[in-house]
Every structure is written in C-alpha cells, then in structure tokens.
Length: 281
Image 1 (cartoon, rainbow, N blue to C red):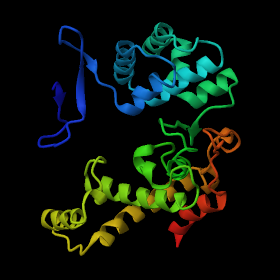
Image 2 (cartoon, rainbow, N blue to C red; image 1 turned 90 degrees about the vertical axis):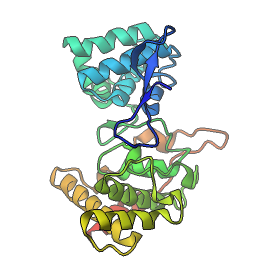
Image 3 (cartoon, rainbow, N blue to C red; image 1 turned 90 degrees about the horizontal axis):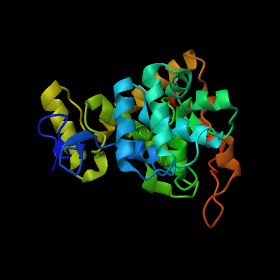
C-alpha cells in the first residue's frame, strides 16, 4: 500500500517504499534485478541490508546491478566471504568516501574482475548481466550479447519465447529489441507491450496519430521506427570501435552447462552477427 507513481495515472505504480516494523520509510524497495544481484547472487538474505546498499548506490549515482555483480567478483576473489552482508555494506559505503576499493567496485564488475584477476565474470560490452541465465533462456542470451547497450534485459525482454533451446532464439530477441526501441521512442513504459491484446497496437497507432498529427496506418509503421533506432545505435557503436564481433557472451556460458541437461548457450555466432548486419540493408 505504500507505493508511489512516477507519473500521474500510471496503472502499475511499481515504485514502492520499504518500511521498518514501525511502518516508517527506511528506503526504496529495490527493483527485482537489483534485488537479485544483492541477494541470491551474493548468498545474502538480509533484506534490510540489501535495501540500505541499494539506497546508497542510488545516492552515489552508480548502477546497483553492476555493483552487486562487482561484489560477487570480490567474493570470487576471496576478498569477501559469500553471504557477508555487513562486509558488503561496508565496502559499498567506500564508494561514497572515495576509498580505493569503493572506486574500483563503483566502476563495475568488469573493471573489478580485471583488478583482482577474475576471468569468470558475467558481463557484455562492459555491463553486468541481470538475473536471467542465458543458458536457460537463450533468447535473453541473444539480447544480452547483441543489443547495443550491453547486458540490458529491458532492451529486448524475451524470457519466455525460446527457453533453453537455441532454435528461434535469435529472431525472437531481435523482434523484441525492435519492439522495445519503438516503445522507448513513443515514450511508453516497458512494462506494457504490443502483445497485451490483439487490439492494443491499433490503440497505440491511433493515440500517436491524434497526439502527433502523424498518419501511421498500422503496427508495422511503428516498428520501422524501432528498426531505425537500432540501426543508429549499431552504427554509433561501430564508430566507437564496438563492432558486431563484440556481440558475444563470456566464455563460460558456452563451456559450462547448467541444469539436468547440462545446457550451454548454443546460438551460433553467425546468427548473432546476421541480425545486426541486416540493419545495414
């Protein structure tokens, strides 16, 4: 009941306060990816400590998901014991004080791994993965590896589309990335999707035409915007030296299996490359 809406009229109101036993606000309820990176990822089950860490990271202006992954790198390196919430909180505070260790983890998981010699770190294009294992959702693995922003699950969420099978995962991710880029351009919340109902895309087209004076005819007209956005982002990355060959996951996702079937990430590189090179056509 203690939730708040980021804008008037939002039917979701996903931002909520975290209350203590007296009903007083002590922080913001973490979003689920940040909650994962500070809890299951670190074997920590103290929610109050997790909320405190996430609030501090917001105040310091650093990405909570990446800091949570950086803390797990410190655990992998033996700097912190797995599950030590007090030590993690102590180190997060060092980001604000400018201590050397705080400056390192404040720069994210990939830099932390380089400093401490850890080569098994879940990042793509320098950004840490969120809580979806790309081996159990191959479509999300494609999103992590190919989208121009790096490991951003919100840029092409397709967790339920292909499961742990690589067949069709690349196209499902690419379609989701195009749809998301279009939605972002319109200014709509990512928690809404064109798939919400058969009629919904038509409502969006009508809304845009009324608001902007445009003459879009159907959903395909809107998706052209998303495709153009992805093309611009891809070309920008190329100019910055981030080529199509950066569209890869860390090595252990290809080599280490999980689950009963020892599942590995198995979408061919040729499929990953062809998606984005097709934008040049």
